[in-house]
Length: 216
Image (cartoon, rainbow, N blue to C red; front, side, top):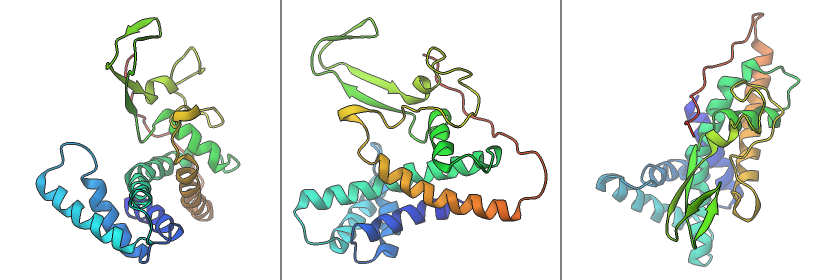
């Protein structure tokens, strides 16, 4: 369910980051995450400010930048990792039990990623995909479209675990939280899959309907 999918990763990560009260951190992180994106209302922002103060008080005594990074990592684990776990739980019945959880998660990240895109600002004039890009131009990078590119992936809309994925990026600009997110999601999914295997009745599993890729 959504509760454990959100609470477990945050609580485990908070304990690993040495916060004084990992259980209390879960609620505080959720309030910060609610105001994380632009456009949050003043009430949500005030709640988030108080939650940040509480998280700072729970954190080890370190330079402000280290504390900010610690809280940022927790906020990222709150919604994005929870969404990955929730989506993977929907797909899990369609995967054979012999399919490793890592492969299941990779295919979910390819086919139905919790974060579907990001943005970059061009630092200088360049060309991308044959198109001229002016300095300061905003580029929208769509992981969902790239992961379904038929030039790179055969049967791009089918759920077939065992394929590579671009959702976390690569190289110097790859997501620094990839290993944390996958480790947390794997732990939760392993338990869910084990419980399902113990209680599953006979019957064919059905692949859930996916959201369509954004046209390129």
